[in-house]
Structures are given as C-alpha cells and as structure tokens.
Length: 268
Image 1 (cartoon, rainbow, N blue to C red):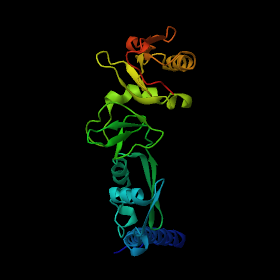
Image 2 (cartoon, helix red, strand yellow):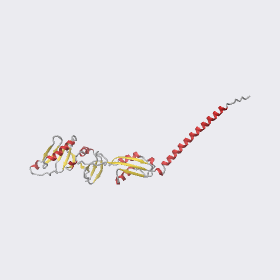
Image 3 (cartoon, one colour):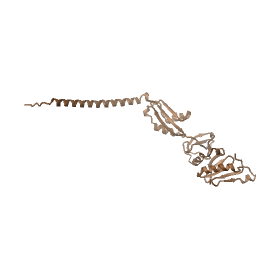
Image 4 (cartoon, rainbow, N blue to C red):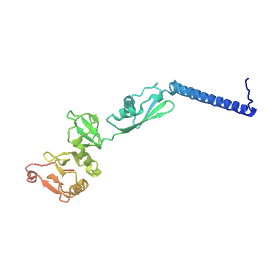
C-alpha cells in the first residue's frame, strides 16, 4: 500500500520561489551576455563605418612643401578606419626625415589626425665639393643640401660625408665652438676648421690671419682673449693669433709683411 506524505504548503511555496529566482537569474545572465555581444558587434561595425574613417591629416610646425613631405612620410591613408591607424609607425617614419627633430602623431576623433613636427635648426654649413653645402644642426645631423649658404650660418671647412640624416662626427667640436661665438666676433670670421696635423680648432679671419684655439677647453675665455686682441693689437701684419692658452695670448706677425716685401690684407 502506497504511503503519501503531505508537504507543508509553506515549504512548497519556498521551493517554487527558489526555482523562479534561479530562472530569473539565468535569464539576466543570458540577456547580459547577449547585450554585450550586440554592443561589441555594433561598436566594431561603427569603427568600420565611414563615420570613423580617416578624412583629414593636419600638420603643425611646418608648412607648404615640408608639410606635404610629412604627410607622405607618415603613410596614413584617408579612408582607413581610425582604430586601425598605426600611430607609432607613422611617428617613426616622420622622424626619419633628416630635417625633423621630433614628431608626435595623435588621433582627432572622429575622423582626423594631427602630426606635430619640430624642425631641426641649422647652425653651420659644410662644403660637399660640387659647389653645394650641407646644413647641419647643433647635433651635427646633416639636414639638407643647398646651393647658397644663408647669411648668419658659419662655414665649417670640413667636407660633409655620408647621407642626409647622418651625424657629421668630425665637425662636432667645431659646432660646439660656433654656438658660443659672440655676435660681435661673427663679422670677423670667414670659416672655422681643424688645423692640419694636430687637429686643433682654427678660425680663419677676414683677411689672412688665423686663430689657433687648440682643444675645446676654456673656449669662452679664448674667445674673450681674441676679442681683446682684435681691439688692441695692430692688425696690419698679424699672421696668427695663438690662443691655445687663454691666459697667454700671442700674436705672430708676418716678417715679410713687416719688412714691406709683401703686404698682408688688413683685418676689418
């Protein structure tokens, strides 16, 4: 004979409530996963839509043909989805231009990119040998080749080597020198270079006199001694200023000039 046990109605209701709560919880999880999937799919579809394609490439810091060169170097194509742009590669490519010191590439949502460029500043020119010159910045980087050297740039009597973008290592001590030459001495200077034999720093003055500065030690003091000698010494037959020791400046004269056999051009 079967035995039927009675279930407390309150227990039955509790079990029903638990099953319903579990069902609602499973439904919420399913709806959440479905919502996330729809959002991800919709977001990806939006990134691939024309609304978020690259439409404009702006360049700051340079203009005209140089801005065009920056755009070409970056190799960013309009119509590319913004999310797919490889900005580090574009930055590296722009900085590979020899006249670019640094670059920063940023997205401008929803459809633009800005490339900010800092240009290298030339401070001197090195002859190439074909009548042209290569401009270099304070770091010795060869920036560009020109036919005429701009007024205000020093000429370094060392031939440029290598390619644009290469560092002109041999010129580095002379670049250190030209950066500290006072403005009032610039008009006296034709070129700067290295002395044959010992490789010391040398300045060719307007006329025929040269200045032997020796090594790079005490350059400010040596230039101050040169200024004092130019102001106080009879320059008519001076062949060389020996400033290897700043505290003991010497003016060496051309004996033939002093005897009147030949004349040396006077300094300004």
